[in-house]
Length: 403
Image: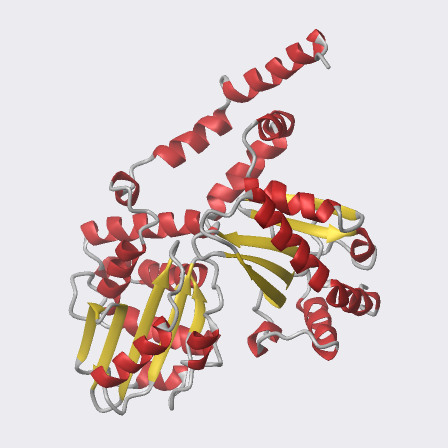
């Protein structure tokens, strides 16, 4: 079928309007092309470089000018945010205790970051950092044992740090590893750096600002960038959708959407990078669009399904998540009803300040060079396996008092 010449002319005018003399697009281009040491050195996604920065900040003797402020606040916030660290002290205790004889190690026995406290109160912090690489079999359990040898009789805080806060393996969970996301690192680091900016040497401040910028883009937590992208999308939606339609689409997204097309009627699907968000029509009819999160979704329902693919980690995941609603009471009502129906979530998900809570997740392994057919098959298997949980969450949402 040949396109109507008038339609082609209209299409070209839309693209011209988007690309030529577009101040928003120029601003976005300027932001993305501004100097950043991590981008210049092409290390924005190198986990070893991010481990270097973290180890530097966690060391009270280093040149950042923060002393032990970053170490103290980082640990206390982790203890405050998570209730699954098994250590004999609280966040308040840690804020008040002396931090003596601190040693920070990089790549000691292959471990990304280790902080050893051998003072009056002994403890060890172990950080295994994963940005693109996957977890090796038995790796986390071995690291835990290595750290216990380095600092005998000291409780260990084992952290599994990933971009999205991925769960560690069964071996990692058995070793006590707690998932932490780079978004949490931003939330902890940003305020500390800003509050103590006068103490930080100018060169170090530039490095830290570049680091937070890179992490913001990596985790989609750069709010100014998100707002600018949303503004461009609103003003040039037709041109952008045209580019997406005719541009190269993700093999993952196509495979997941193909699997979903066989699974029943959907209210909508939406792509976000390598992820595919979707909502069955039956489930959409049981809830109202009262969610304030997920700015990349046009229809902000509180409870959403999505596929997450981590090729380097060799897996495809199906996730059911409760986002931030317009009132904490509504969110808590949904989570409590889901818990009664058998959906598992961590206790901190019920806190008023909590925002995103995953209540269901299943994984399927993918080969390192997975083709579309393999991804589509894995997506179909995951969605078929979730059928009983779909019925349960529909029942939960039918009982919610939306007013």
